[in-house]
Every structure is written in C-alpha cells, then in structure tokens.
Length: 254
Ligand SMILES: *[C@@H]1O[C@H](CO)[C@@H](O)[C@H](O)[C@H]1NC(C)=O
Ligand SMILES: [Cu+2]
Image 1 (cartoon, rainbow, N blue to C red):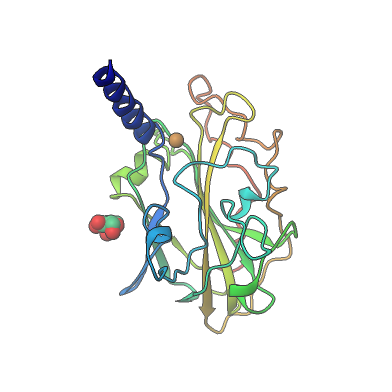
Image 2 (spheres, rainbow, N blue to C red):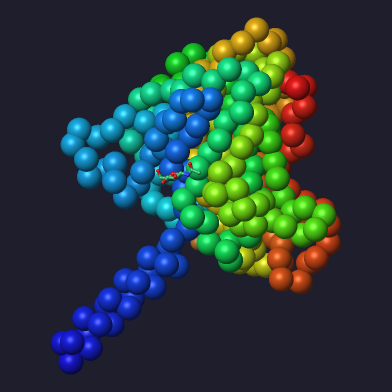
C-alpha cells in the first residue's frame, strides 16, 4: 500500500512536471554579451540572490487571465509593485541590434505566436512599474507561416529554442522594458483558454535615433476575449494568416 502510494505520488510528480513543463526565457544574447534570465527554479534559492535584467516570474507556468496585471510581466508582486516588480539591472543594447532570446525547451503541443513589445521608462527602468498605462508598442511578431508552421513550437524548435528580433534601428535612445511573450493556443478554443507566457527584460537602448511611436496599448487591456487570435481553435481553424493578437508592429523605427 505504502509502496503503491509513493509510486503514485512519483507518477503524479512526473506528470505535473511534464504538464507543467511550459517555459521561460533563460538567456538573452546580444552580440558577444550573454545575460542570464530570471531562473524561477534556481534564483529564489540562492543566497545572495543573483541580480538579473529580467523581472521575476513565479514559475514556468502561464498567465491565463489577460485582464489581470499579471499579463504585463508575468505577475510578480514585491515592494509595493503590483504584478510587475522591477529587476535590479538592465542590459545595454544598441538600436538596430539583434537580440536573441533562449527559451527553455518548448512543448510541441503549445503552438502559437511569439510577440515582442517595448515601453519607454520615464526615467529609471529599475524603479518603474507601468501599471495600467498605455505605454506599450509592438516591435516584432511571428504567427503562422504560409506553410502552416507556428512560431512556437515549429520555428522555435528548429532554431534551437532561440527567438531573435531586432531593436528598431531608429528608436530614440533611453531605458525601456522589452515585453516578450509566447501565447500558447492549445486550449484557446475556449475563453479563458489561451496561455500567456510573458516576461520583461530591462534595457538601455543606445543610438542616435529620434523615432518614437504615437500609438500605444496597455497590459492589461491589449488582449480581451474579443481580440482576434485569443479565442481561436487551432485544431479546426486552418485559415491563414493566423490573426496575431494586439496592434500592428510599429515600423516607424526601421
Ligand atoms: C540556451 O541556454 C541553455 C542553458 O544555459 C544552454 O545550455 C544552451 O546551450 C543555450 N542554447 C543556445 C543555442 O545557446
Ligand atoms: Cu503548458
């Protein structure tokens, strides 16, 4: 009996870790500089806690309610910052540079788009919480290709779990949050059902550009039940292109 029970808990644990084995960004690379991401299964247990450029996330699991502040940076409340507590450090990226984000192994079933936003910090990004202000603009998106390959998992797996995007070349310098996410659609035939895996990377963008968008969205706010692509049946809806949620990509910085 005891043996059966411990075997059962072992099975439950194995199932939980595989079902719960969703993912997060574990490394950020720009040029020859590599930044380790926030590691939710290591960092909280280290003393002293490592300092990161990525805002804390509670786990590798998803945010499922896009009306919550958790949708912004994956829901870490600390020191009076609700849902989006700042990290102590920021990276320095040149405008126009490529940024490579190394995701943990992404489960095959979790198909969906990969989307990246930015928001300009009014001053010090390590002290800024955007709250519900409309400050976000989309800089990159990838949904489903004409030959029906999803950004996640197909393309991500084909590129060794590395997703690369570019900081808009003419974007005006300053401190920003990069909000990068995968939306997993395997349960999105229902609402709520889509799974959101956002994380927020703090950066200083350098350069001489002067471009800045004029239209912004908020998180929460950008995604609702009625946003195209949020309530979406990946098993029956073969229409192309897949409508990537959120505003169009801002191209004014290119
Ligand atoms: C992604 O990060 C993991 C963990 O540090 C590392 O083992 C792996 O080599 C990295 N992948 C690439 C393609 O750099
Ligand atoms: Cu999952």
